Amino acid sequence: MIPRYSRPEMTAIWSPETKFRIWFEIEAHAADRMAELGVIPREAAAKVWTAKEVAFDIDRIDAIEREVKHDVIAFLTHLSEIVGPEARFVHQGMTSSDVLDTCFNVQLVRASDILLADMDALLAALKARAVEHKDTVTIGRSHGIHAEPTTFGLKLAQAYAEMDRNRARLVAAREEIATCAISGAVGTFANIDPSVEVHVAERMGLGVEPVSTQVIPRDRHAMFFATLGVVASSIERIATEVRHLQRTEVLEAEEYFSPGQKGSSAMPHKRNPVLTENLTGLARMVRAYALPAMENVALWHERDISHSSVERMIGPDATITLDFALARLTGVIEKLVVYPETMMANMNRFRGLVHSQRVLLALTQAGVSREDSYRLVQRNAMKVWEEGKDFLTELKADADVTAALDDAALEGLFDLAHHTKHVDTIFARVFGE
Image (cartoon, rainbow, N blue to C red):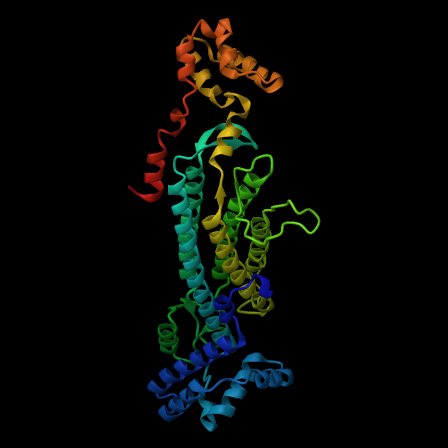
């Protein structure tokens, strides 16, 4: 992932230094257990750990790999240069996938922990702004057209509930991916005791893979990356809402525009929703990584490496991108500029049309058929659309309407409080009492 969309803590998880350090820990823990079983000398296992404080020479490993064309062998060769003759006891009965797959899952677990912290920060921002605007009345839209009043706080509460579900999904995805396989060639434990796998799993903070076929089953990874795609889609939904609200014709909310910021190289007046547009693009990328993860599920027989090149790319890119996107969205929400006066002005732009359903229902309750009620309300509503009339005034002037509802009854149907009376109930459902 390019530095522009990367944050240091997540990027560090995918560095060669981190990867080789995890490989070393897997091998060293496996050696400890094999020494306990008497498979290798205890002194050899202890000698392996002397490499703990040594910085691995990445260039040296790369040079060896260019010759042997095998990354794990290149690492083990370099490890033997550090440890000495005792290194011959390392990797006894193991296969490369034992190291690669267990390491990959350790990295995904660590990445998940960062992403969960990111989501906690986003949830806190959404909740704070939702509470702030719980009673800020705005127009709800369907098909992009004015529908009925809602509150801006409810918009944010909905986003909070969605992200809270996503957090639960990510917790499940983390659990799904947190397995270890140290089972040897084709996963039969023919040349390594199953207790080695248990020992390594415990030391690396993983569970034991119940049955591996030399590789950890990739349905786990498919579920993980699909979950990241869902989270990204929710980010895009929120970002798209902000982008729509920032349109000049709407301008009910906008991204914070900092001092010295410039919106256009040609037009000095511009204040563009660049952060949320960026989030829309990043979401597309995270979703794109889900498909190859699903295609990795079908490997030949007990194993092939068609998944390997895919995961070398999507592991870092998907987690780094989502980490950046979550942090960026949190900043957008925290600093979002909200314009309640514009919200009210936009809602009143069509002179009371947003109360049409209440009038429709009141007419039916007064004895008018639903078909006739709809016709009476619509014919007056069209005058507002087409002639700029006032909806309540037109209703009061319609004899067919006033035959069922007097002026006082009609006026009572235009009370905004009717639309916000259950906001507290919804907030209690989302945030608790």
